[in-house]
Image 1: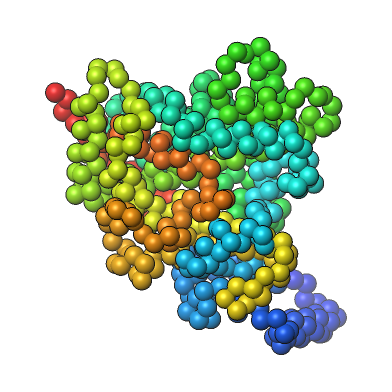
Image 2: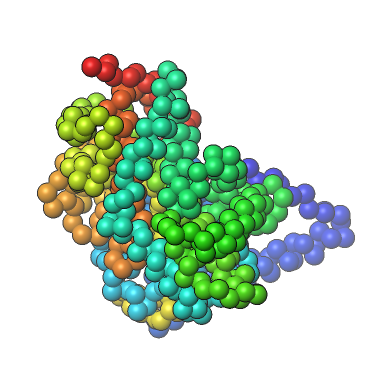
Length: 493
């Protein structure tokens, strides 16, 4: 994103004053950023420029397809697995490596709590709910969140598998079979978002799904950006689209509250959450409805971008590695041949897709759907000899381990065998995080990806139209041209 120069006034009577101010500011900046540390040993690093911090370096590394460079450069420079920086408008400490991951995911719960950057909260969440911390949530809202997490457990998702299978077949028939070439990024988003609307919200109206889908791409481009609300910026555009989505979601929540009272079956997650709210009216209920809307937004965001991204890169790496495609095809055809005419996939079938899941994990190792996540320090603590004070933000990143040659030899090679047997060491493969705060949608994503791949590889083979297509981050990983592929249906016996 180009930054336009600002033409300052430079008349003769202002010039000396401006020079004086510039020198004074530089002197203050020098004192603040080079002062000796206190007795507490703080992690090494730089906070970059005032306001901007190190956002430009962070963004440029991502844009060039090497987000790990931002981390590796600083690990090498400071000879440390943790370092300080300033990104997304916050002073932050970046934790790297398996030991740091273990602390953040497990032993750090008494010192760390979940945290979202201001740019995410402002663009995705109802502003009326931002005043309330999670500690202030009502028993009803805590129960609603618990029901949703319960609904995302593997045991609860078993009944979703045939629905996913049916929707995958319908999607391929409508969007793949009529064409000789397709763009995988676009189509995987359509599929995963449609499945989420159906299973999470019980929405089957295709027009409503399209209306919800439209603003999401613009929203995502600004969620992890410097929160500068100025016309034309990614953040400004994301704020606008976020308001449109939230208005639509609030209408769905309010209507569903009326519908669940007369429905005997409430299988979707939204209905389960609404039943936990009770029957109160007034301002308190309005806030609760907005909080439910926030939860729905997070579910849709995960399905729209992170799950579709995982699926897209799985398709990409299968195209680049024909020997892996051949093994996935063999495994999936064995399952297909075991099914009767019109019989849909079930839990047992997905459990047999072991090699396919190893290949998917290797895809997520090379191109994780999310770079990492954030925490906020709730109590001072010491890690690796450094003191991390209360109030500071912590960022853990998948790239600190996923491409570490000491953990994954020849890390740029696509090798599903890394995940066979016991797989990689604990806390080194972290596309879903880990510990008590591991992504609750992991099993849902696994089922959806494997069901779709089963249908895709048993129906098609494909090749990339742009063999060396660039990988970019906007802010999540994607392919610059949308992964166009030529598709060829298998001859059906």
